[in-house]
Image 1 (cartoon, helix red, strand yellow):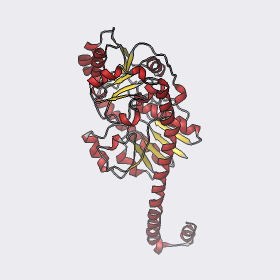
Image 2: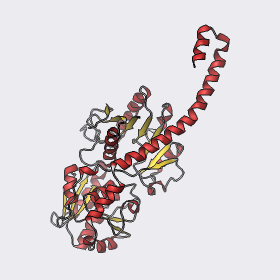
Image 3: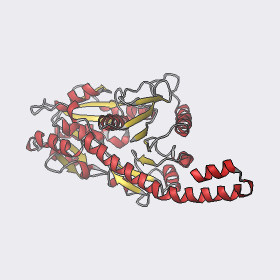
Image 4: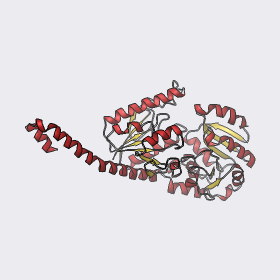
Length: 381
């Protein structure tokens, strides 16, 4: 199968450090190539892949020192979509897999190829809802059933959970004496709450997180004053190896999310390393964490403080087995292949009718001008 994979341009694939969507795309592409499919990845030029790489920009937007203003970043994203559309109009594929989101949807009808769109973010953002609602009949794929709740009427053709390359993670069943926080230093990820919970529970907390341009003010004013470099340490943004070392040596991941998390790759990354997850009962959490077996799902901060005391009751091996059996890249790739087939079958069911109609109109148009060449051409058709 010839597959065009459209990646965001903000980060490279795979990301150097933080970048959940880009890591998922990398895992999916590598698995599909391994399975024998012909994949073309449209992404930033610094991406690393076994597939054919089409370089939309020389490097990722985030790594470009000249693109720091938010408006300029958004402008580059739209320019990137234009380059993607130009390439797709001049190259043939069996299916196009859109990870760019709503920005690509207005242009999908310009392409005579089935398109599937994985929704990586929440569906409760008003301006994005306007766009998704305008293209509600498109082929959408959710990454959790919870993600669908704000817009249940979208045409969801599949639900495919994000997958990890299991062999790239290391387990540790004798962790060190600290808990971890991983992700972004943004209000929805709950870094302030994580610090407060750790202090109330009397445990050490090591935080590894990205401070994005949009979150810098929040970090400086709300989070940084709570970091004492003793009980609470911030080690910055880490790469893949640093993430593994953080998680595998951690007694547990403290994740007091403050939003309806669409998936939360860091949940599965923690568990595959053997680290139990302590998370709020929001978004996808009940679909990913097995309460009392691979962590604890809590309703408030006070409950999480108490559950942290039960960390030794969780089997770290159970955490690993849960992810291996349910959130592998192989399982993810098979889920997407089923979705591709569904989208292709849908297109095939519609296209013959359109083809016959257009052919009939063409025959009527040339009926008064037939010569031997025209008749021969039509006969071959």
